[in-house]
Length: 194
Image (cartoon, rainbow, N blue to C red):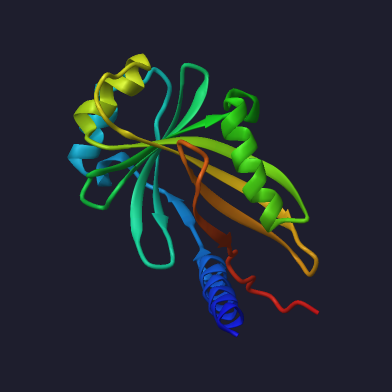
């Protein structure tokens, strides 16, 4: 009897937590932003990188917050650097390929995706760095840093389950542990659908 109660409680807690993970929704709308409206601290950070190609600025609006994003290509990789509306650095994301991840990390991520999806297709992978701007600046410029910063992986996945297909954004730790899952929602269309 005791084992059944413990099993039932464990099952309920797992079910509630599992539903909570998938209850998260992510909506982002980007609009171009003129450089004159970008906070000076964000401009200073980007200027310190000495990016040779044009930097495009965006105002990103989510369900609950706004941020400012700089997008550019550097060293043949797409970069996206996100700041809050005051210009404080939030994170740096660099597009990478699945094959660039080490085997252990790929196996761990694949395990979690396989649990959530009957079938999946990876649409985008970005390595994400966060931490002190004075540490991240040399990391991005040279690829080297001896000081501490946080590394995560943001992966956008088309996930097919038994009942539906959706686009989700996963965030994994540097060891491949699942941190969050957010289902990407799109803006409703302005016309009637039949």
